[in-house]
Length: 258
Image 1 (cartoon, rainbow, N blue to C red):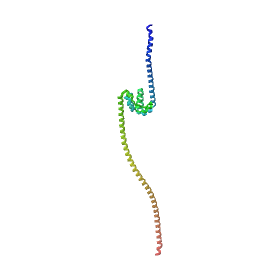
Image 2 (cartoon, rainbow, N blue to C red):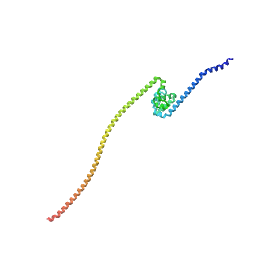
Image 3 (cartoon, rainbow, N blue to C red):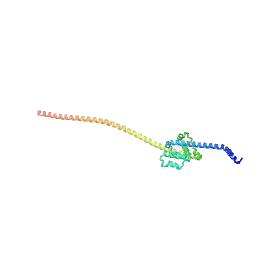
Image 4 (cartoon, one colour):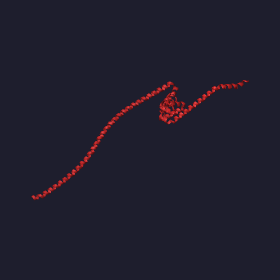
């Protein structure tokens, strides 16, 4: 048999030997492709949920609270953070949060994972609403990229931030206590002043009542004085008439006596 006659047989035999290795590789490739598709579908589903809740998220999330974690995860840099928080294009927090979400979506899977982890860490109620899972706060992206040292550094920064916030809150609490004490003193002063004003008002009311009574009495006395004056005038007139009559009588009697 010629040598070239053995080539098909050899190739067929080699193919038979490779089948056990090729099939698992194809199956693994198929499984990986399916897994990637499932991950992409899950990612799209989550982003759709995020976009559907965009209005609520932009109104309730504080971007300044999320950016340190996202920077530690290396999905945004210092320039992104500066643009989100300090750009004049975004004057309010809702605009800043919306722009931050747009940046993260452009980062692909990393942005999606970092955003969910930041929600899991700072806003667990939104994380549960979007994913349907309870938060575990694993900080897996920081652990994967920075290691335990990076996570420790991030947590130390968060502790410092919380301490600074607590110090600020204590200062505000002290200021409010001082203001409250001042208001209490002012309240006591005003209450005392009110009591004094009430006493003055009562006295004024009594004086007004006395004035009304005296006014009535004055009118009565005026009427009585008027009546007495009229009576006095009448008596004076009667007296004058009596004097005149007496003179007339004296004149009538005097010639007879002479």
